[in-house]
Length: 93
Image (cartoon, rainbow, N blue to C red; front, side):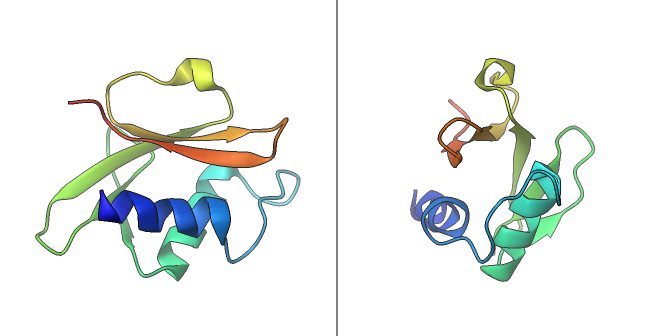
């Protein structure tokens, strides 16, 4: 759970740059924010990207602008264009 709090800080409360949809995609923005915070963001075949933990475990994420896209295949980062706020939705085990 500590990692999720740091992720939320990286993309919700203190992102290094604001998300500007006309300049960059949501995926690119999220990956940039996480890398700036020191996360090891890597390629993922069945998700938009993965974060590799110190224990070499991989946490898979998808990004979306629509909360209806969320399923239980992995964790999600969803952008709400009305409030201009991202949310992190962890994988339900």
